[in-house]
Image (cartoon, rainbow, N blue to C red):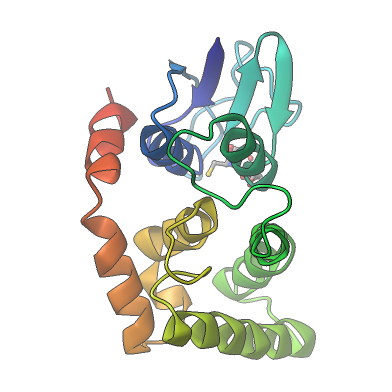
Amino acid sequence: MLTLFHAPKSRSTRMIWLLEELGAPCEIKVVDIVRPSGGARDPANPHPHGQVPALVDDGVLITESAAIALYLTDRFREQPMGPAVGDPLRGPYLTWLAYYAGVLEPVIAARWSGKAGEAENAAYEILDGQLKGALERGPWLLGDDFSAADIMFISLLQFARQMLPPHAVYGDWLARAQTRPALARALLKDDA
Ligand SMILES: N[C@@H](CCC(=O)N[C@@H](CS)C(=O)NCC(=O)O)C(=O)O
């Protein structure tokens, strides 16, 4: 049995979306987190940093959004949300997941806080080129199939569209994703 430790309107919302896409049964436990608006670390949350998302599968703890996304998309294969081992798109898939966590998040965080220096701004330009290029080939990051990699990046656009340049491809990508029934179901559970 899976348990997702979740806080409404946070980085764990995208994991509910992914679970809905996968049709994976999961108990959602809402926990408190520290936010700029308040809140406190929740002793019921097993995440070592008191953050969300955290996933527990039969007693095994998985943290970090990219790791959770990969774990879930490997574990639930009925409605695939990522290429399996052996698929030529597996490499690009892993690259996008790690790129989100290792490049996009720190670069966006630096720009958000107004602390971006030359290195972050240069990385931002390259990141923009990489994303834009993939979406121009599109329609999704991996081509024809929507995947958990799209969910990761789109969750940023849902939260702060302005953090990526105003290219039409980004707006179209976001608009296409927003029509997915699994997202509508996830949003109903987000704050439930
Ligand atoms: N690298 C983590 C970041 C998780 C994260 O920052 N979550 C925020 C919610 S959006 C949180 O729990 N903040 C509370 C805190 O940092 O104490 C991931 O991607 O899963």
